[in-house]
Image 1 (spheres, rainbow, N blue to C red):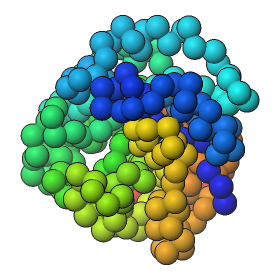
Image 2: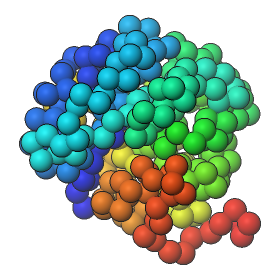
Image 3: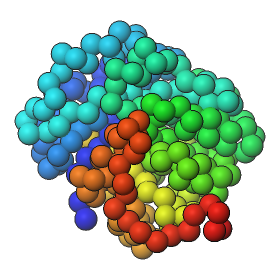
Image 4: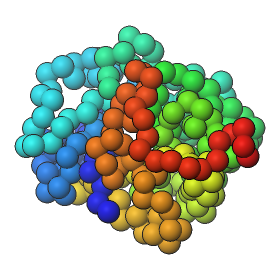
Length: 254
């Protein structure tokens, strides 16, 4: 199956990305995507933009070149309680937030600390996605993370960039496999993200898809494969759209 959308992309506004929004939209159109998310780094990331950048998304049309433009942010988790570097004054104007652990913004913690940080971030109603939870530098209790995602209706990301040669993240493939095993067990959906920092990586999810095929992961648990998957992510604040799957194991049944 082919991904319909990519919600994890960066423009030159992120400081260490190298393409314009226009270039990313054109790349999304060439890939045949139906929706493209803008998720530039939030202000705590060195070199990124001021919060004013996100407040002015209103100038961007809702659709360009036949692509729905979804306006978001990649927020930085700042402490082991899951606090973010942007508040409701910014998040309330956006359609979604990815919450991620980044070394410039939070030190490496213990498994318990890192897990608590992600679960705390999931409790924020504006957080729709947990970004790249696959880095050995931030060890996680994946069963606890997946159960929290099930409870909070937050999507866990399978990040294509984590599997690329030269990625700063460590053992992304191993950790993604562990996470996906729990997602399959508990019927928890995932979202694929390119984490593109240049136009030609927009919509590039080949490594993610190869891993899913290798694991025979249920396609109905991959949100990118249906329009309803995008609704599931974006409508979390409205009580969440129904996920069009059945079966699986709940926390109480495990």
